[in-house]
Image (cartoon, rainbow, N blue to C red; front, top):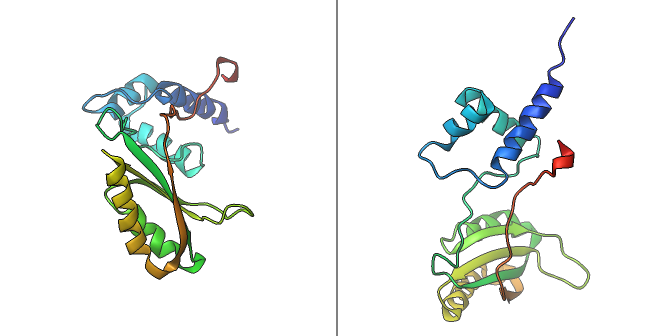
Length: 167
């Protein structure tokens, strides 16, 4: 007879999300802290994180800085209409620029022709305009059109949240 561990794994995954939904603590070794909270080894904790990421429950683990507090008060989502065949190469090229915080592909819509999005941050409107020009130069003839949507306020970014009723 085998023992089903799926319920205990589900509880462990929920506990991990509960512990991390407000972010990891700023410690030298947050993985050890998390392992201690879960009463697991660090290796088992990292395996759980990898499994949840592979299953799609966790998209990514990354630092999310507050750009405004770092002095980057101007932000713009640059949007590009690039040739679909060139998307893998151009997306990687644009995403690798040091002033691009995130870059991704989106499907075109009837009233929205843009398929490549890249967020830029700067200390002035002039700086983010210059970044857009640099991206335009990198895209070259593969770019049919572009625009920049400028942030008017900070939106609170949060990760996965579980309500008390869910666990």
